[in-house]
Every structure is written in structure tokens, then in C-alpha cells.
Length: 255
View 1 (spheres, rainbow, N blue to C red):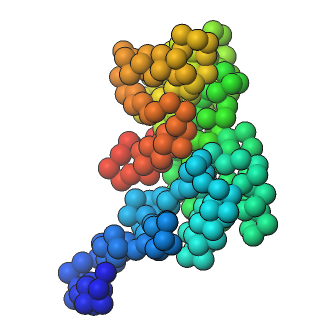
View 2 (cartoon, rainbow, N blue to C red):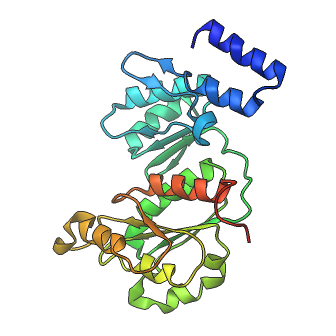
């Protein structure tokens, strides 16, 4: 962004023709750090309500550490997904305050966004094997400033386990349902609650599950209304959807 562009925005604020929030949005569209092989989007939080995240898969530990150090220099909180313990050890040497969720494979650095939600994000898993994806969603949602409750192992093979938590689930602003195998749990939950349901298929299952494809198709074909579906094993994406639902002024009503 050129100096003249910044001046025009500042003059517009002074004249009262645009708000400070609108000025921040305009400025953030040109805010990034050119690191050569990386173009770090430091303005994403102002534009979208959440910082740029780092997908660690395909990057060396040194690359991840360099990106995180640059983010912290610019005051950007860190969410790094699909991180190995090797990556974490390298990051922790520079950032002792880094936190590693080993099960969810998520590194976080910095303080979470202030919580402003009126209802929590509730995360359900069909089985214990779905917990890694659920933990990825939980860590992401917490860093975005959401209150999170995680309830594991309440799949349809023992539906009475789910019924025992209905009061908590019905108080959610959004419900993330993580399931592999037959992918049936989101449909059941969608028929029991009035909150938006985000379904996450996982690659958990035997041969005919096709690494999560059968669960994905089952969720896309759900007869229960109010269900959206993200990609296989995408707990990170589900958390962002839930965050925007819970925090949007145009979104779901508060209860």
C-alpha cells in the first residue's frame, strides 16, 4: 500500500466518512511480510477474525520456527497444525512459552483471543480414535477465543452415552461432531439440537471406509437439517466455521 493510500484512509477517518474498523479492514488487505519463500499474512486477523495458521506438513522444523518467530515479532498469535514433536522441540528452543497438544498435533504460541462468545463450542467424538481431530479443533477454537467443551466417545453404537450429555450440547452456540466409520453421529445430533452442527469425517475405519470417504459421503447425504460438512480430518477448518457462527453479529441467535 502506497503512502498516499494510507493518507487517504487517515483523512477519511478524520472527516468521519469511514469508521476505524473499516480503516483497519482496508489497511489489512495489504499487510504481509515478504520472507522470500513465505508471504506471511499479518493482517488476516483484522480481516477475518482469526490469524493465519501454519500447516507444518511439508515444512522443515527450521522453516516452521522461522515463520513462528516472524509472527511473534509482529504480535500475531500462533496456531501451527499437523506438527510433530520434532518440530515442537525446535520451536520451544526459541519460544519457551509454546504449548504442544501432542494428540491433536497443534502448537500454539501467544495468548488466545479474548473470549466474547455467549455460548460455547461443544465438540463431540463418535469414538476415542476420533480424538486427534477433535483436539485439533479444540486447540484452534480456544486460540480464537471460544469457550470449548469436548465430549468423547458418544457414538451411535451406544446412543445412551450421547443422551446423558444433551443439556450441555443443547446449550452450545455451535456443535462440532467428529466421526469416522459410518459417519452417523452428526445426523443423530442434528435431529436433537437447534444449534448449527459442523460434521467432520475422519479417516478412522476399516477397508470399506476408504480413509474417511464413506463417512464424508454419509454426512453430505444426511437427512437432518442444519448440518454443514468440512473435509476429512479437518478439525482446524471445523473450528473456524464454529467460531464464525458463534461470534458473527449476523449469525445464530444467543440463548
